[in-house]
Image (tube, rainbow, N blue to C red; front, side, top):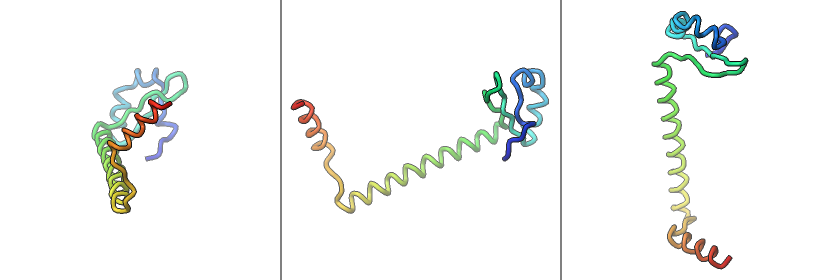
Length: 97
């Protein structure tokens, strides 16, 4: 969705026209509320916000799956080390320093 100039509203205007803005948002618009001329908060339909949160969660799951895939590729290629040994080596290096 494209944000237009009509979708940018000052906090003062938002206070005075909250009911009207809420109806516009419910009809599909999104509003950016500014404070001192800068973006402050957004007014978004609750269902759309829930959808955005689900998209974000799905994105995080995809990132984790990619990390798992790369880890499994490292294991298959023999490019891994035992974590306990690596931690012990780091501790020993710190005590020598």
